[in-house]
Amino acid sequence: MEPVAKEEKSVLMAAKRWGTFVSKYDQYKKIYTNNKKHIDFANWYYENKLLGYSYTCKLKNIFSKKTNALLKSCEEIFDAVDDSPVKYIGVVKEVQVRTSRNGAKYQQIVVADETGIVRAMFFEFKYQPNFIEKGKTFPVKDDIIIVSGQKKDGGIVWMDNLNIINNYIFMKLSDVK
Image 1 (tube, one colour):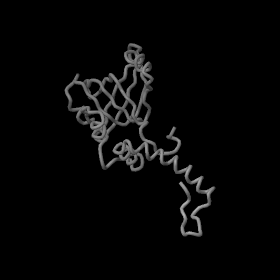
Image 2 (image 1 turned 120 degrees about the horizontal axis):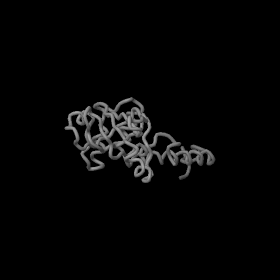
Image 3 (image 1 turned 60 degrees about the horizontal axis):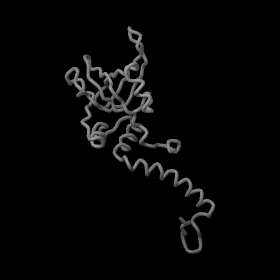
Image 4 (image 1 turned 90 degrees about the vertical axis):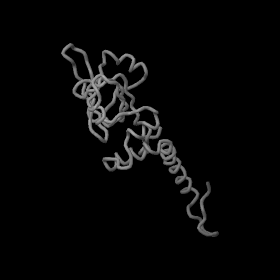
């Protein structure tokens, strides 16, 4: 790219300033190019981060299209029959590491979507070795996760698997690697 002239005799920017402009532009273009790949998710993510809610679309609808899986909302999970398989997406609101009466460690994760919240249990003794071998990490507050498992009494989901997906969208230069 070359500096654009306002008129034939004057240059809009000096060559040195133009070089600085182009280098900064390239970094922000990486954010734009990445977010353009996931436009619906990017819209939801920006609205949720900046406004506190998304009014254009639901997270469930965005990822139901992408994954070809029937994702349930938190409201639908409460209505589901006990011991039925469920798969849903939401934002982690709280993570607690606890110990059962038997001495087994587990994580209780509160996941919310636009319709409500669901508590999910992840038993480390059962799933942690396979989970960590796959290079996965445990979620923290404000992560966006897809959870699959079985609904148990009281609306609690016993997780079989979870995937953290919030690394798709960039908001600032430090997010770009």
